[in-house]
Length: 450
Image (cartoon, rainbow, N blue to C red; front, side, top):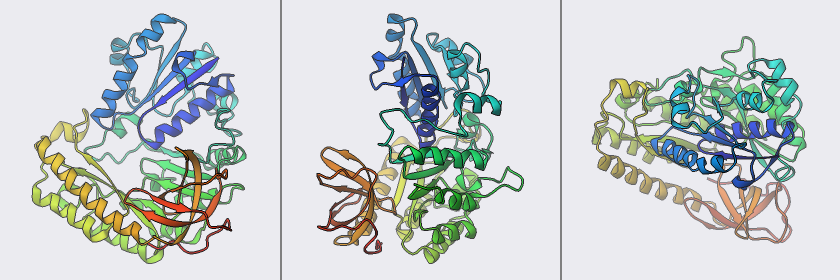
């Protein structure tokens, strides 16, 4: 029996799909890349933007002929398109779908496949008995020994409710996973060859705030770094309101925690930030960046920006431009605002920025960031940096530096899963090229300079 999983969206969805795959592996299914050979098809969907929702519904519709050809085929629709508040509308629109699963919940599918023997994954004992999640997260045979880096959710849902965001309505309230389950999952992945772990949460630095006397993110990072076999630890995505000095110190003082931080600002104008219900000012954000750079001088920082939020004027947009110009961040994930039905912005704000203006503002920031990052990366030309290699792509090995910069190396060696020192020979805004020194040691030769 075979299964096929199609995943769209964020790293959390990637992790959710991995957990579904593990559940199916426990039941004796094997992964296939060929959708036509699958007995079970899982579609894990995203609706953060309209384009993602449209892509999901289009892909789902394309499965109808397969179902008509093979009535025994099981189709499972999962993720944010389903959400946590019911799916009657989807049942009517897609009657050929057999199972509807909320985000991060393999339960409905496993219940269907076991004819109800597993009724609900809300029961922790049932989860452990059928998935052995506290003992082993099983990777597909094709990934065992080959998967270098893996995502592990530590906080599900979100209770912050920014006015533009649909996630709280689709993924439910914030809830932290028990530390024991997380570390057990890390150990199981390490035993299968994974050397890098990325801890995930919609607001990852709120981990543990809903658990009395539980560890916080800083403490969890240290525990994760202590697991034998794990060489690198990352985390995302953070919120400026909760990014405190204890967390900064944990990154600075724990060598296996990588000096790369995802810290979205979303906008550079205080009024726009207030309308977004972000809870900080641009000066607050600048102060946090200054603290990070003071204690972790070589840290790279990534941010998220939304252009064209309701009411945003050109002058307010230029405040965002100026913040990025001043802070010179390593990555800026850009998005044009689009209304998501059910959000506060949808109910109470008019989407009054034209599509033309949104596209122009996006282009301006895109050009700005390309220039800034090209200048940052150019400082690495000729330097020796440490790279964890993940896979070979079009004849070149692809890997990342501690600061999450993408590096390509040509080599006949099998570099998968190795951390090697390389010399940078070319830099661009989005990636770099490097060579292996004649006698490259497996440890850092020169500190990465930014």
